[in-house]
Length: 120
Image (cartoon, rainbow, N blue to C red; front, side):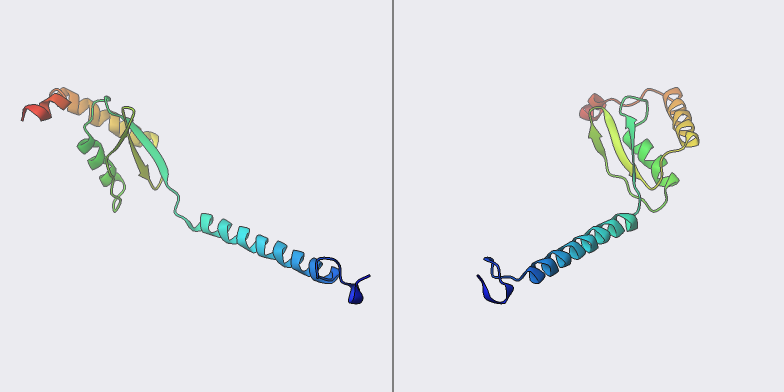
């Protein structure tokens, strides 16, 4: 027998329950804190545009910078797509404007190829 209600762990039954209650409270505060951080982050949407769809990166970047003033766009190319992040998804009007820009670029002449850069 242990005096004063002690168990083999050296803690009374009440102490163990109090410790578990504190742990549960701490865990719930941590979860709530993480949830608040996620809610306060600005939403960012990932967009992509095919490298071979008729626009150069500079043309696409100019379009995006005019559409989303104050945002900067870095060239990220993965598997024949340029990837970019925007504060809101591209709308159908944005996609239409990109197609018109592409059509105007292809009518004015051929798109520079990678080998054109090497020749200069």
